[in-house]
Length: 136
Image (cartoon, rainbow, N blue to C red; front, top):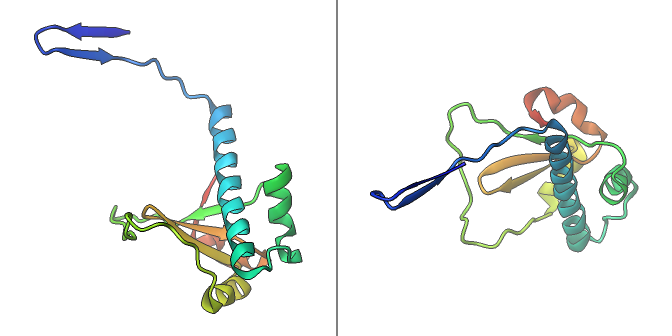
């Protein structure tokens, strides 16, 4: 439905938006696969260890859309987000501290435009899941 107001010189468009649960689930899964794909590609590019067996589930999920891996995000109850410099190009680093965190806790932390995502890389994540909200 459209309305044109000549005196204001404005055109107001009212969209008839209906939520489709199936589309939301499909979009969410594609988003998660994209984040995991980004992790796997950059991890391999930086460390050349992306073919390690601990990433078999991630590869199957990304390549063949089999399974459903969790993607967690840090929810800030105060509405304030610390963010990186958005003018700089985004680079994922996999220095020794990051690799130790992956091995010890099973998570990789990704900050993306002020949102904090946690990728479940290996099976050690189960003890920490109660602290995080899952994107479902």
